[in-house]
Image 1 (cartoon, rainbow, N blue to C red):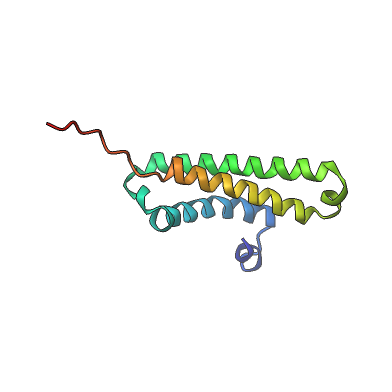
Image 2 (image 1 turned 120 degrees about the vertical axis):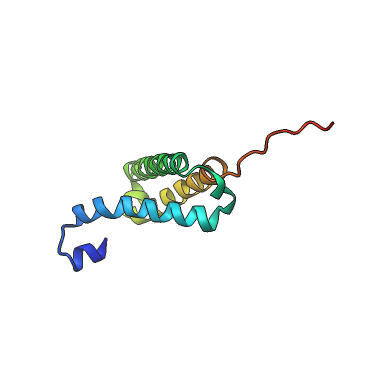
Length: 115
């Protein structure tokens, strides 16, 4: 995003619109090929759609948690970065667990009946 702003001279809002989908693609590929290798055998299209869904829900959780903390006032309102840190941690746990259990899980082997 910063490269688009600094080198290409685009607005921060436009750069964010470009950087988010790019980040989704890159992090999906890294997770598929490095973090969750067992999920490599899943169909690409359906796996990517699940990943986007999990990331979107993670964003909603992040934002809702942040908004709830900041609007309670006190420490959270005075230190919004602290509220952001908590919300990021909460959404990070959610997205990791969903990615591991739902998006990149190894395909279940069909049950075999012994002869």
